[in-house]
View (cartoon, rainbow, N blue to C red):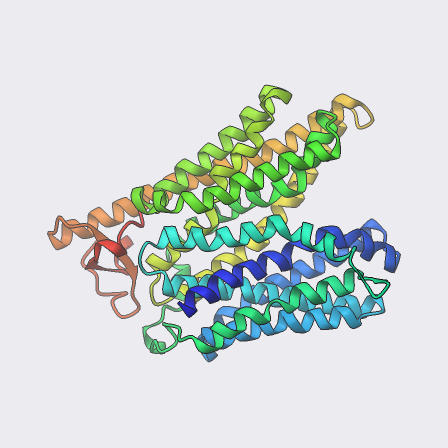
Length: 444
């Protein structure tokens, strides 16, 4: 119970920390007199801190255990809130914000590793459910942040610094179950863990990195581009455009709440292929059908929402003794790819706009359509890579079943000790096959 509380409350805190910045950014910009370029530099440096934390969290987990990584992650969030409150100069604020994003990165990896270790049954359902709490807190975080910055205490109105301190101080709550709970996996012998070098030889993992990267680009870009697209292409007002984004996040959150059992039922990779394909088709249908099909932008959230948690479920099942290393490797490369993807969306939009006329309404609309089409294309590429991965794992499974002469369902895991002792073809020699508990099956 304490393990579940740590994960679920942890994802709520993670959603708060990532999504309270929206209402605060205009006030931060005004307080420090930042122009758009300086603001962009600040956010880019914070992304660098996030990626930096992603790169070393797995290593720290192997050294001190997931319990203390969780404690450090939550504690750093609390400390960063205090530092932000005390920051009165831009350099000090930048350092405090950078520190917060290091905590953010550690928290994301730590929660993913913890989920991979404790959700050994109904993995798809539980992974999607835990990420539902992230989506839920993401919806309410901007509203709570805005409300706090308008609260007056003894005649003094709280500012963005106080808001950050109050919201990040909530990270104390999940520290309690994290401290009291016992978490599996920390006692795994080092020799039984999968090395990073061995993981890089696994073709399936590279395909997982690709499908996750394209899926996350398609997911995250909606929050940045949908409102802009609706306002400038269809001349919607800000309230209507923001309302459509809210509907997208509603569909997104409900999909994570209800589609988890579907992924367990029909298989993880097949689910990824179907759902990401659905999202991509909805996006293109919305673009080509014009304003009347704008609701399909929101419907695309149904398909893209389960991608990230379902990929975490795949990693948890496939790399039982190396989930921490596999998650760190995958999420770090995904983060780099996401930065590149978001840059490409802006470049495509700008390039097409100039082709059709930078100062003309048609050029603006065509540019936005092209940029948003790339978001839909990323979802379709995610589906295509899922199909290739499905074929690869199916061939792998059939080969090993044939060699062992069994007809039962099998579950493939990577094993250090049997890396070079497999009877299958050379392409499959790195895998050990064991008769699986039905609850541990379903990677395909």
